[in-house]
Image 1 (cartoon, rainbow, N blue to C red):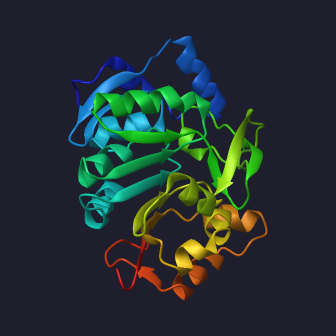
Image 2 (cartoon, rainbow, N blue to C red):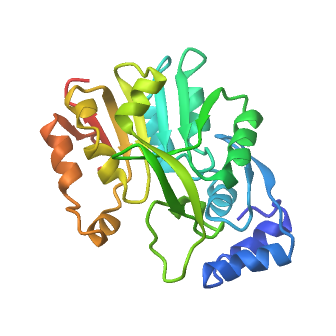
Length: 262
């Protein structure tokens, strides 16, 4: 970790090892540790020193270097990019630069506690991003998400995977197809999806988007253990994408699926 960082990041690295995670969050509040702005090669981010996002950015200058590099391969100026499970917007910022002023970036993140973080991160980088506070699954309506401790906001989802109870937040949910229709998304849209196992419902609940190749490429985080825990087939999504003519982008380690004719 660079020596010039505020002391809170050094403390944060230690506090992140405290278990259970709610105790780490309590210690953070007890010590009144606040967010800081960090400048990185990818942009400036308002991060929490006692969080997975903050520690990654402070250590390597990027929340997810591999995903950022993959976006650099699949996004081009003028593209439309939709980030489903945007978390704190760490991929939306470099994506905005890649698509340029003629492109479009849409961030989908249901957590109320992250809305101001997202807005600030976008403002810090002069990014024009459309922000929607909702979740994507296989139906429209209202559901509850399980809010994980704020040491790892990214683990929040429509189901819980912790041994302890989590606070709940009521959120609007919709389908991927309805989202495309509402936002008038064009053909050849690029999607990133990381939604803690509910990629199963999100993708299989809107099959026509993939059958018609409305989505050119998808940067996909498959949470197979979470899918299996709910009694679902963890191979259903890969099988479906393959049947629709998608294949892995070479060198993407299985994270990017792209149309064979794109």
